[in-house]
Image (cartoon, rainbow, N blue to C red; front, side, top):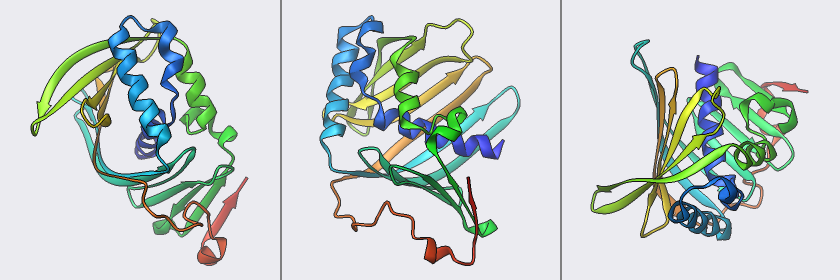
Length: 221
């Protein structure tokens, strides 16, 4: 369960921040929803980088499961560095490096080799290009900020996902919350806070320094 928990956090973060939302236009039933998503997408794509913290909760009331973790992430175009559950994962545009200090281990993988986790950015594009209806959903006020939710509904009747809700701060055009509802009563909620745009990052910020982990076991495909 914990391994899939880690993968799901990364999957949701990448889905939200790397998807080209223009590709959803043919499936949408709401011009208002797609226009809002387009604005968010354009704004994120314009940024040099984006850093934020997040809280992630996985719940299944039927099975009595509730797992919560905090983390932080920095994204720049298709590069990322994410820290959560005591691990760090870095994508340098070529390889994915998963650093596990507790085990003194580093796993190095090609994105194409982990298709099931949807970490490969190109897989995420394909994942969202087809099979989703996009609708405008409820509005909420959180700490005086207006949050507009957009609902993504899979067209596949056999999907294990009922829908995804993306909460957007309508004034700042920032993503506030992502909620996935599964048909097995599993709900995952990612809440994003402390967003910082266009930080000054070291040139090698997304580069894995193998020498720094000389005492670790390096598992490379």
